[in-house]
Length: 182
Image (cartoon, rainbow, N blue to C red; front, side, top):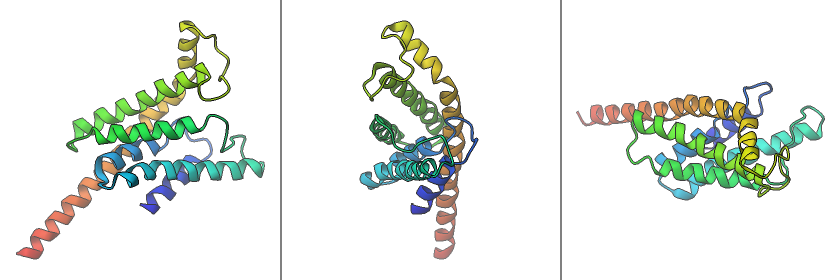
């Protein structure tokens, strides 16, 4: 688990990666669906985010990136990753259809809630100060569409890696156990 946290945190700070294309939502889904100890299911994406935010902050402080790690309202993202774990809990049976559905629903929920909280000012300073009306909300969603597209693509990609790897691992483990009994 620690290796997964480290790899995800390091991947998130790679320069010039597509906006939103990161493994954290897929990790939250995987943790919620697979990890039996629920506190670890929540800890996995949160630790990964915190570590990458810490790395971003260090790079920002050293003048190596314009992206800072910690900012006002960031607590909302951590809460939203907890919501993503609940989306993983909803995967009662791990199969292609359920993982695909969750990999589309979770980033959509994240997009809708994170852009709403930024637009409304619930998370701190109001993003681009869009008007506090329906048109302003739609503008705020438009502002985040590049992140949303990357988030969908990243969640699908990393879900295939995580859930596919888990399937292969459990399948090989079952085959080895059967061979050992023979």
